[in-house]
Length: 391
Image 1: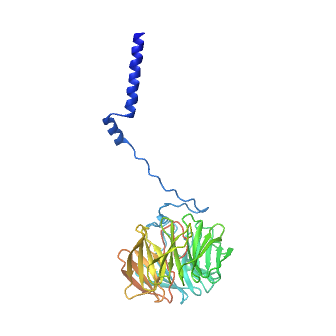
Image 2: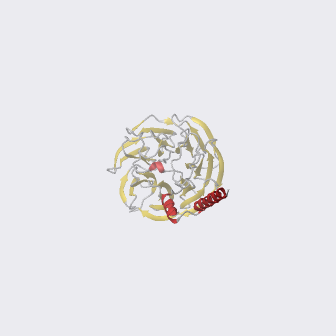
Image 3: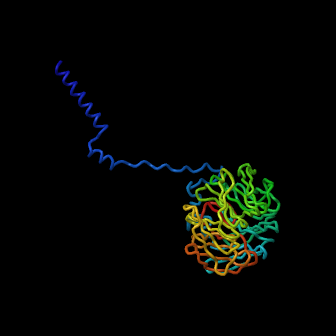
């Protein structure tokens, strides 16, 4: 009996020692465990649930993740590198070879071409003949223009992120016209009460888009699926004339250029509250994201300059001035990200600018009234339209 009692006591003592060891391991064991421990995974930001049919967001911290230098999708990989310049007053498109900075062809198009717009599937370039009421298709593989398609008042052209609709910005008709993205047949007309709808960009999830109304100084918020206006506001600046619209890489902020307020409006798209104005320069007009998504190039048409906005620093960090002045308007960044191309709206010329130094590389004579030029081909998975907004 005494032996059994002694054995039980020894067992209990051993058990207590074992439990004590679990809560307070020897120093050497603790060091080994710490060294072998695997740090917990950092929480990853979930991609937003996108518009039905929209390609999934690759990186919720950067909606332009597919636009890195040289990441040409297979569909455009064999297209020759060209810059297509619509000459609004000359009713033509000047085609520039970016390696020689020379115009190699002039394509006759309809009356008052405003923008050259890559299609959602990136296979076609559409020339918006605003007063000719047509769209001229250009095959970027051959540079050959096709038969014009009748479309009324096509000032600008965009595509929903799922490729389901083309959206014609019918500026003078005061309409958003949703069309078949291939045939351009009208599917739905959404009348608007503002004047001069012209530019837009889509939220990260593609479920809504923000539209600038140039002639009444207003902004619209439109539901992509219902194709109805769900928000409208007047900009807090007398005589405001909003132009280009661009979403920040993190998808949280919309930037709207304003040529009369001489700066960029900073808007919370989700809340759609009154935006704040960031002064940039006289005649602020076009907005373009760098290939590394770090900065935004802002053309100031009225003073011949380009402002540089750093997203991480949330501020303007530089300003580049064109030698001998100029009227930098709309354009795009080269596929390798090294050159910013902008039309000189009032000077019948195009500017090529080094994105590293801000120095002008070339000043190329073109037709009269050059406007929304397209640099093509481009990286990305699909096009949202305008002069080339890719995601």
